[in-house]
Length: 344
Length: 278
Image (cartoon, rainbow over all chains, first blue to last red; front, top):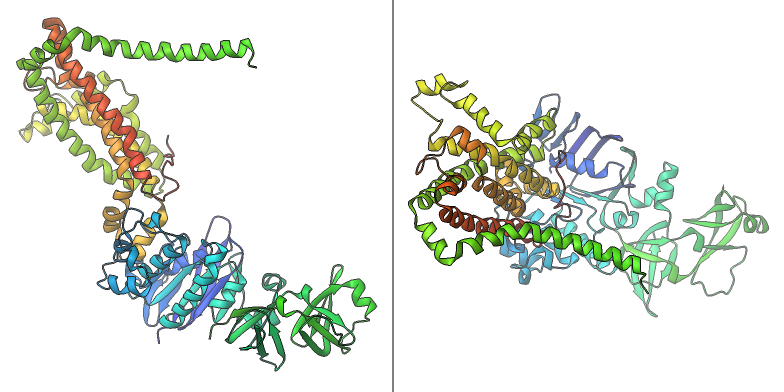
């Protein structure tokens, strides 16, 4: 079991990136705003930027150790790097892009990624989704020991994005490599990674599963980043086009989206309504539970009810006399409950 | 309705273009008109013309090989590395662009001539450079190389750095990355630079006559032959000139077409990035 371990300091013009991470055979997502130093971390692992201090090792193999004067060049580190705009060589065909590293398995890779028919095409002549597959095939061609993915979905339009995300998810599950994924989208991170590290101004604010970050944000930035509520559970389709999800705490909720297996139910707190009594409205989901916390936020109030966090106006909270311990009914529509497949 | 003053202004602009085009094309048309087809054949058949073309092609071919062989790696280094004094190095390499050619010739004489700075050392090695064909190569290389190196730096700077990074992560070392990624992606710009340098080399006159002289069959290049035959046999001078006009026109077209050819195949957005020194 080769584990990637890094502990590095990289001085950049505007900030100092200071990160210590350990990645086993899993996908770790680094999430944060642009300019937070996420890509710099990937570049340091690949050997494309030299940290002023630190150590990077894969198992027993040391790639960088500033104290011992070790700094392997990129070509001597076993990484598969998916660049943000894919960085396909425009002067080479798809086949020669994939075979650039000297692999003999080009045909096998082209077939595996369903791009055999594009072998002779130029990267400029194929679609965004196809480009991503070519770039992935190329990154995996040298049988890397570590996979580095920089914003793998950001170059795609919304339509292609969901399909590619599902493909990528399957691929990551299949290769089981220590993988670092950089994204600014929390939902993508939750879908693709087992653990998520939130990076801001070059520092790691919090690291944990998507559910942990949503439920117990260590920092207001983490809370604002996750924004929506994400509840992990087990999904199965039920009649009427609905999906029934048994949340980890046993609560039963319905979504109008289709899903199966391990999923995250994503809710916007402002779409959850609160009432004293269960009403016969159109909402399919009603959770009756005591209020765990009432947190004022400007002219709004965030109310924790069981596994949910609802956001209501201060006036509504006053009218309902919301207070910790009071039993209320939180309701939300099945159409407002989005499903993201969860890794693991 | 456009006002009369607007129309008058447009007419003025068109007139300026017409004057410029007429002024610049008339001498070129005049060469062909003066020499005629028969004169062209006779002039080019002369020994002077044939020797001059032979000397020019040989010396320029060697110069271009030197310029490309040394200039390309030098330009790649300057385009991809940042170090203190980089701007100074680039400025030094560009100096011959603005140096009067006669001064360049004198400088070459002062450095490599028999009485020059390295004269004794070269003589000890049995090498004489001044007033030999080697001197023509030196003069052409000195004067033409900055045209190539400057364009080559720009061309390499235009190559998306991510492409080079991608090549490295795919297992290619720096040398392989240069051959397989940087060079092909910069090829259009490099070709254009080479065409400009070659055109400049063909027309080299001042530095060559100072450092190499004008000895028919040895150091007399086409430009020197035009100057000499102007006094002796105007028809030969005109015939050589006519060929040079056609060659220059061809090179100019190459300069314009080559970068387009690369950009049409490239996804690099910064193809036309400028060198810091320009």
